[in-house]
Amino acid sequence: MKKRIYIVFLLCLCMSVIGWYGYEKNYSAETSALLAPIVSAKGAILIDAADGSVIYEKNADQKLYPASTTKIMTALIALEVMEEIDADFESTIVVPKEAAGIEGSSLYLKAGEKVSVEELLYGMMLQSGNDAATAIAICMGGNVENFVKLMNEKADELGCRNTHFVNSSGLYDENHYTTARDLAIIACEAMKNTDFRKVVAAPDWAGEDSGRKITNKNKTIHQYDGATGIKIGYTRASGRTLVASAKRGNKELIAVMLSAPDWFKDGYALMDYGFMREESKK
Image (cartoon, rainbow, N blue to C red; front, side):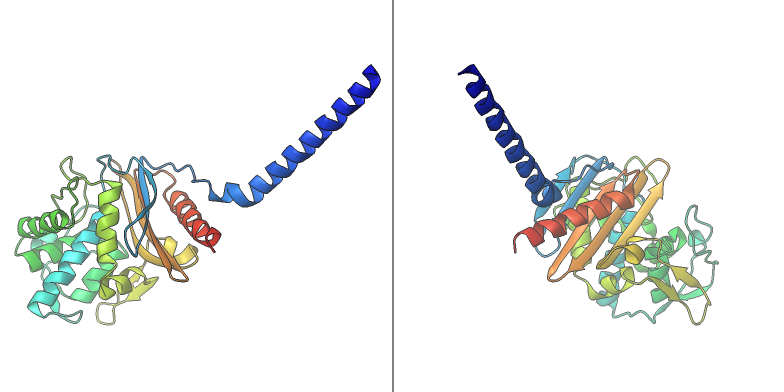
């Protein structure tokens, strides 16, 4: 009798193990792919670009520093000013002396040099030229202070209550800050502009007159399937920052990573997660 009970117990145990193994196998194949990734960023968010709905967030309202992802707002304001004054990409400006020699990433503009707005926009968004961002601010705002005022007004208009700009380039300043959520809102708004989308999606650009050749520093454009933009940033104090976007089918996602040691890895993991979630709905 005891032997028979023991055999039944072993059979039940085997069935349980087989059942658990089957569950684990099924879990790994179908469910683990939908688990949110662990990212290195201090603050991060993934949104649907169509309606701004949040798919993933981590400390999305923590005050952090945008570095050169600031230039997303700079480009947005520049394009809005251009529309108001009926300027286009072929319009030229004279580089103000205040813009020449700005620290950090640079196009190496020279004071008095005539440059097209197109070259400044591509130089600012692809090569992250701080001098280009400063030249745009001065020429389209009258001075940097007035242009930054427009940036802050736009942030307020978009409902970005935890964002404050003090320059157009993203150079570190304690009072120049944002959050992952606010930056996603700004990026989402900017991507509605067709000229902005054209610039940030370009893998490279070459100026016929100046001879400048510019390669997009945002590796997302070169590496990620369906990439549509948009901007990287880095300063020692701010850390690595990335706003990345991609579109597959009818779904476009925007991922924001602030203070992210593994910035591109974070971005790709978040967007993979978002697209897999979308596929799981089909």
